[in-house]
Image (cartoon, rainbow, N blue to C red; front, side, top):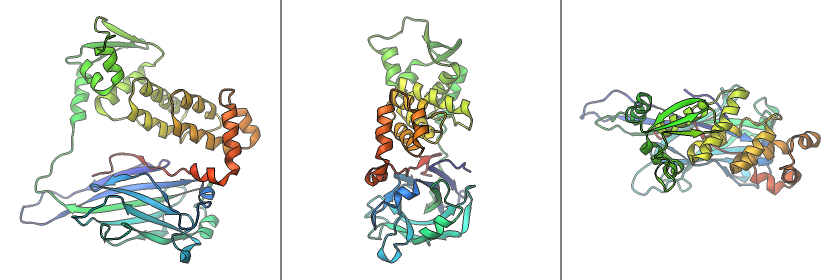
Length: 370
């Protein structure tokens, strides 16, 4: 079960009931990905046989990535788009078996049957390139005439199945986060309180210090606030601090939906994560905000990216501005970023710099290694 977002990675797993020791069974680790190519026309500037690769991801205990050849992988298919699943691990002592399905997606995120292709179960470790896929996935002229290319973007679903031997004893998944949630909710053993936005929050110093070097310095360092009954945090909403505490105790971040309030919440969470050195949470919301840039938020996003050193968000803002007409760009650019925005927008005529700004990313929905 997953919801489609820009450059997403999702995973699901299925496994049968425990079997007897005398029965040989296998289970399949499954990973489902949606690879969205933003700026398709820019990718065509890549040279012949030149592949653009996604970030690596984990599935079935191995590391993989997806390669996309906008101009085909060979001279024989130079008019086609080629796409492959690649095993990044160098394996010498075991066979890595997997099969993959590639599906072009329509505008609603549904697979297009006529452009859905399956491989058989193949041994990736014995292949010289450790890659399997389709050289003639779709002709470029067919894609460009189709309804599946929208706003210079298209998406491909990648479903990876990695069979593996089922253990004789099935170990249940970790539920440690549930114990920490109980610890936070029950307030048992709390030894520090925070006043944020008029609300009081109780927490545990050791948990905060273990998760955040900033909290560690504040609570146990030379300038520790151990003698203060209540630590007051200004310029932060209570709901933001609550979400921050939830992440610290569970390592699970709250999802954001559509709407200005949700985007504003994500911006505040990014700032709070940067404030307390929670890099993982910061990266999650930086990536999410890259997909919520519009004419009303571009300037705010640029200021946020500059203040909290978010390179990817800043780059996404410049790419958005460069795609707009000059009058709108001039209206959006603030005095702080005006010169830098103009430099980036004007560089859009340089094909080499365009290739460097192609957006091919994979964003996790949940753990891919199942």
